[in-house]
Image (cartoon, rainbow, N blue to C red; front, side, top):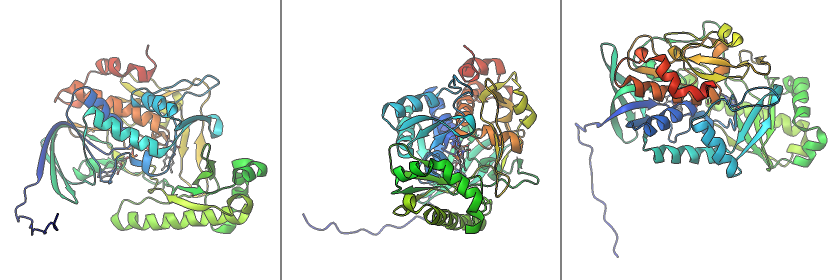
Length: 432
Ligand SMILES: Cc1cc2nc3c(=O)[nH]c(=O)nc-3n(C[C@H](O)[C@H](O)[C@H](O)COP(=O)(O)OP(=O)(O)OC[C@H]3O[C@@H](n4cnc5c(N)ncnc54)[C@H](O)[C@@H]3O)c2cc1C
């Protein structure tokens, strides 16, 4: 066979954007957005899932989080609080050996998961449910007509895309869809909420770590000596991945600005800080980390930045009191975990049996009829959000957003009957 000669092609000056129509356009494919998209597609809706990153999964797969929090209640007999894809992920990843249930810090139950396995699970579940995904797509404008969003315009490496949908879900974590649409969004008035640069260190001597007193010994040494190494964060931890010579290092606190230059600088700054943390580990624990290397830097870990102006703001008082709202759609027993200081973390844990709830109104944007938020950009005050942003409730919010969109059937999302919604998502509230 001969050489296949090249042909010259040229972009047409008036290249038309790709236009797609669907029932539901979900922007953001993390725990919340993937849950929304899969649930809605299984309800028979045509779903487009749009994400600016090259792959789906959001921080759950990209930022080296590697443990699910907020899946279980507290106490001696922990119960699963969230169903939907949460239950399926636990079933499938446990069966394939990619998940382990462990007692977390501060008397909590967490689930370790292998992020590559979760990545593949989400991809397959999206494809099997019939969700169409557009990755590498950044919204540039939203067409609006009165109180309805009509079309999302996005740009990709391969051209422009227009998504015309009946309902939109902002699952970007940073309320990027609401922001692009020029709608009201909120930011912390005074607090700085820090993110983290996580990483994986490979080649640790696990036996030496056990002999030295395990991760707890590292935590104590961080408190004693981290400042001498230029490490600001004292509430830091190293977590050994089950059956491996690898450890997840979560030892940094960094600002997560929302401007293009600041956000880009943050990436290099985060890597430098992780390097400093690793230098500390090697110098202080040469038997454990002497032969180890940094295997992978996660994507920047962003906790809380900007969120929508919803029809109700979940408050820290609601969280502490465990207020059960008539329109509750998700629940959680995870503590208040606010990373508002460079050196420490504000933590308020809850006792056995405590759960708190997320009301549907916190997902509904106050200014338009067909926009919901799900995940870490719903309307909650800074302290309340620091609890309900963990992945268990994010998945439950995604389930609720899908059912609300389905029930609204093109009408105003604020008019969805809370009782009808409760009947759909009751399992996530503990109803029989
Ligand atoms: C360091 C760190 C450790 C954590 N540890 C845990 C833990 O152990 N367990 C736990 O349960 N939770 C943990 N959390 C919290 C949890 O990971 C997040 O709150 C949760 O994953 C948020 O999910 P989400 O779907 O709302 O958003 P994200 O996972 O942030 O997903 C948002 C998606 O939107 C996309 N996106 C954003 N902006 C745009 C845009 N303009 N255009 C297109 N796409 C866009 C992103 O690419 C991303 O895919 C941690 C968070 C951090 C930062």
